[in-house]
Image: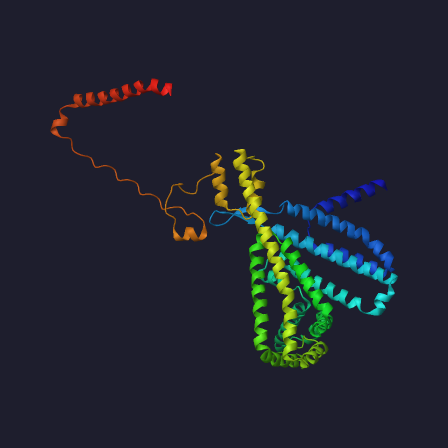
Amino acid sequence: MKSVLRTSARRLAAWVRAPFASLYRVAAAVLAAGAVGLALPPWAGLLLFAPVAATVGTKVAHAVRAIASLCYVGVAENREGHPTLDVRRDLLQRSRALGTASLAAGVAVLLAARAALTLFPSLAEDGVLVPYLVFTAVLLGGFLLFYTLALRFDSSVLRGLTSIAVTLPVFFIVVAVASILLSWAMGVLAGFGVPAEGLLQGGFAWLYEMQRLLGAAVGYFLRQDTLIVGVSIVAAALLLLLYAYSVPLYWLRSVSRWLKGIGVAAAAFGAAVIVFAGVWLADVQHLAEQAAAGRLGTGLDAGVASSQAQAVAQYRSDDLVALIKAFVLPYTVGVFVANGVVAWRKGRAKQAADGILDDFAAAGHVDEAALPKQRKRYLYCGGSPTLWDIALRSIGHDVPLPHPFAPRRLTLKERLTGVLEDPPPERAPDPPAEQPASSASAGLPDEVGMRTDSTAGHAEGRTKRNEPRQALQ
């Protein structure tokens, strides 16, 4: 029995220290344990799931430490021969670690909330706190879902969706647009004779439930509930702060562009609504009526669209301006915070890259065993490969030159890209033309040899006379 326990403990420890092989297997195990916990009494289910959460959390901690050590980042050469980072394994491990941690934390919070409601049943009966907690959980879950997909597929579009899906109204718009596109796709399939209506209502029934839940949250937002607007501002700032702090360094440029674009769009949208509020109000009301009538697609829930249409029908221009300001304000605050974090991380990365080169200059030599890791860390921090080669050459390290390192005028392309190109090969000098020997020199071979020897003797004498002077110096 002891040997079996020891073997199981060793296998579990090896599994915890190993990298993630698959997200689906771990997710299935976590969901199965969570389903068993929900089937048991509240506190018994929570206690049963606690060891599973601790094990998964330890594995995620090992993965995070390996990711921070750049264990899954490689260095390769592109077609032009310049070193680049190979980040496919790194992104895969990041997505699996984030997905596993999110799923385990979500199940644990659900079981803990279920157990807490048994101690404080008045919270469930009051019906005030629970909706806000559900809205927060849905928003956080949607953000983590887009973040995990962006890491898994390394998509710029998914990075943009992660940046904007930090408020409930936008998340509702994303789900509604996805439902409309899905209903249109089902309509195309129905045109080819495929019974798609049943597939939409059966296989994608969760979209209707998500629309109802998000529709209730948007209803609070349309009524300009002070608490939901305040929660939206705080949630957007915290989520964008988490996003900007946790993305890999090689994503910072793309994330910075998305954040700047969102900030500009939010400012322009907030300024334009003041001018065009009256025109936009009629268009918004007409669009809400079409959604309620089911003209935008069968994927939209009729009840949710009808309730939103009724709320918008009572709007005036001032109400629309206030709504857009409440809609834009979370992005204004969140993007401001996130841009500060991105700038801070860029500065830290530059200091780390410069510090590696400064260590080379201070030591005057390099550790050959640690050089590959230092090079990978330098490139990960955004360092220039050209400066890396120059720094190694300055301390006498053997680095092959891409071209003769001679001062020359840079081309326009080299100034724009910062990459030196190989110059065209120099033309070999033409051999000197052979001159016919004259009759005067042809008859005096001994004199020519005597003059040559005399010149060599004078040079040798000058060298010997200079030797004592050089010795004294």
